[in-house]
Image 1 (cartoon, rainbow, N blue to C red):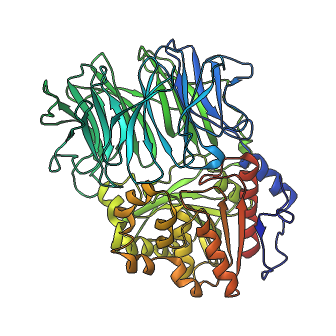
Image 2 (image 1 turned 180 degrees about the horizontal axis):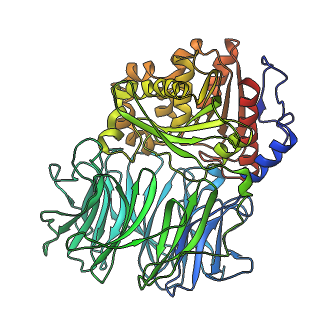
Image 3 (image 1 turned 60 degrees about the horizontal axis):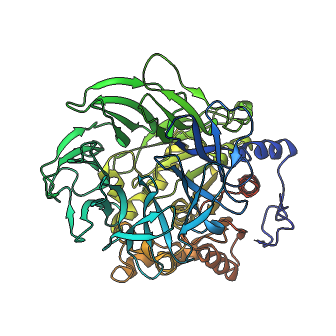
Length: 629
């Protein structure tokens, strides 16, 4: 690990409270090194035979493609190159190929790679253009992989079929930003999601003519906000996961089935699955007339088998950890390999039986967990916004702490993300350094209904800002936080919200730390990827028509009000939220004599994935708050 005192990518200015780069105690540093240095395994892909598993793991220090037999005790095979930062993997239906996405140098502009399961015949088949971006799709048949590709010169993305053997491309659909979700067995029809954030719909594309039809009409249940669509097993129907109408808080994601006529015309949809207290995060329609459904309620994953006919619960499948971000279903439907995580458990792979009385078993190929004595379990804490809206978050309290404590409020990214009881290296590192951590879900978060998620769109964003102040006041009133000893922290949109908090309520926060946060929404729109800018208009506002509003809600406009020390961290290869967002804020603060430090992490993109950098970042953030709280 590079010392903060000698790291050439760290810009420091002497600040009150001691020399820049003060370190934590040896015991705390060792604890943070073990916590933040913990490895994980994710994105499982079962082989067609069900005897092997391909997945992504960062046990080597960076995310790599690994493969192992399900019960393999020896070291797994590493199939990706030493310089390839792997994002995801999918196994071809005949077992001949593994398709995997690579983020070159941390860039969001991903490449599509192919390799044989024995590690031979590796090739890059899409995205070699440094300005193009490949979005994962799936295999349509042996040798055929479908994905979406966005060129760098515009906001659109085409659906492209890639031949694994020859590398040849065939465009199946174009016209708008199309995120492919399914292709018919005969490759005549494509299902793709299109539209900006929060207002997406699924279209059925005729490959021969290019004609696009909405699967669900705009005024149909789920027609305004669809997440994905898949062809039914009979090829005569489409299943669409979409937000269904209901009272605020009950307007949740469910499943709709739509019949197709002989010429592909969608019929009237029927709601198959819906729960007013949970979102449908994933599903798999099975040949026995049931559907495997992944529900999320209060941030916790619930796995159930339902009857397709009436939605009745056939089976509840217990999980050993509270969050399941990914999974791969066995071909016979009898089991799945789940990517599971919890507050004390980095992402790991488990074999979960779906029939019989068996229990989930961890796969030996998953990395070792950190020492549980270093970790704490958070509790869900609820409170009220100023307008009476119920808010909630996850409260981490160091062992032995009773009563008020110095506290860091940590905001998630998105803003459509959700804080869940999953592994957080930064939160556990802060707890190890003695801080109470509260991770809230302010309005704009997912997991609480569509109205809650859209409650911060455009001009309504001010309401989510008020939730920040309400959060701090609720923590103080509950005897959790100490006035004058409260910090703000966040990643991506959470970094932006941290800067907003420091400029709007400088008296509430004694210090702040951001990671990859926007400082000016106008320059964000100008510098981010074209497709990202186009998709973000409904979330933030139009960069031309709403320019004055964007200026008013941008921290750069109000930096003169910032009085608390702020640590600005960013990966220097980030093209999602360009690194200039942190650099310009730091330079402006320095020109004003403001209290800031800048930490640029070389070779990292929007998400920090290198283990040494995760450790360095966690230690620097903990030391920063230790110094100023």
